[in-house]
Image 1 (cartoon, helix red, strand yellow):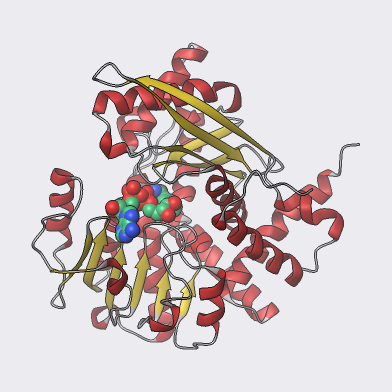
Image 2: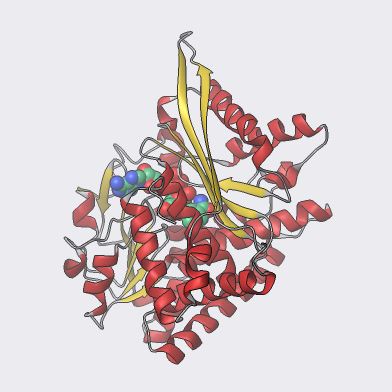
Length: 420
Ligand code: NAD
């Protein structure tokens, strides 16, 4: 199949990762394209009326990567640069991530090309509801389950759930995850992704024999994942010395006051104007000397121009796809840098989303402690499986993670067979 509908640098990057892992697995050529290419996609026009009476049409997408192991699962991104290729890459990574964590899902992702900060709350609600309205034939608790990603929030998920429930005529809370807790959301979901990132960073610090109290961290991106990762790192005893968001970087070698930064962002939307650290450009932030570098913003921020300049011991990939294939090759030559790959490192989010879905389907709810205990068990299992695979194959952690996830999806497809 030669398709260019997903044409984008991010999709090419995901495909190169897949090809490398498939080579390592010596995957049968009869399976390769079946496992690699997204199963289906939908592109929709979402017209909404702005507060000033103008009508604007936004482009929305949803990609479902594979349907062989259960419903599909994946976030919804509101960002001006969203395109079909990026969404397809993110859906592909979700497939390998779910399989690595042992969740009964295929991967999916959705997005709208929009700057959500440029919309009023009313406009954002109309756009969210319109997108879900267009998606109704394509999603459902047993078909495809959305969750928050860049630019979307528990409130957006609540509007989605309400729109879908109005259509089916009954409460369908399991159609999305990452909802507010009072509406069928799970305790622990808000912090799950960032907590998982910090949990893995600490676990690998332990492996390296570095005490958390003696370690420093730099966190790029201060949204859901970055702020929660910074908070949890602090709680584990690590000193966070720099943070950043779309407004720039903030450096304080004595330690950032994470609580103050979170308060500031909840009031002002971004860190712009915050005075808790010296301002530095975002690209310089990545090169600060530290033990843990946690990229928690967007794709391809660690690339061939900065990979050799990084000054950290651990890269904890909170974001999806933050490290390009070229940067991976450069970093492979540097034995001092340990990469915790995205599909392991940020898997806490989808794991607790799965818990939320299970709780909604059963109408029974767990405490935060129960959720976090169950989460840590799965994170430990995934890490142990990845490390065993790495030793067995003698490959990088990214290759070990991808090959485990991809192998499980390929096996499901092989066993189910090819319908004539
Ligand atoms: P978010 O919208 O809550 O936060 C994104 C943050 O990145 C914001 O602080 C934004 O200002 C910042 N940012 C944007 N451009 C930047 C730039 N050029 N430099 C520095 N910072 C920049 O999004 P999120 O939910 O925290 O997601 C962040 C990343 O984590 C994404 O890659 C997402 O796919 C991934 N992820 C999210 C979840 C989840 O549960 N939300 C789960 C797994 C992976």
